[in-house]
Length: 150
Image (cartoon, one colour):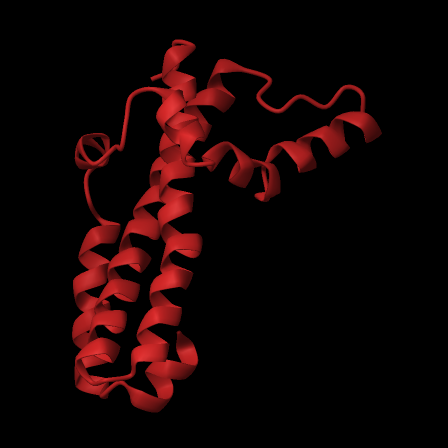
């Protein structure tokens, strides 16, 4: 993404794309709930989102390792920690929405200017770097809501 933008995207357009994408960083949480894919964890599981959760920085592999090394370790020890997690989830989702939009705009620019390989590569990167993390944040939020943390 960085290489393509540096080598091929006119600075004027890059600044426009960044400005547009930054708007999505400030999307209210009520909009994020509206943009949510599903209110059921099963929908996310069908897309394989639960597998992504294994490999993230706060995912199950890291938590299992910490739990085995430090027996008193708890992922979310209190209701206050759950509230903090909810806030963090929304912030991370806003970030990924903003970068999803930026990647889409840059990929579209690449396609319009016949940089087909770059457009395809950026689109694929967008799916893995932004779309799945958005779904992961929604999946975690849905699971928390099902346990009474909203």
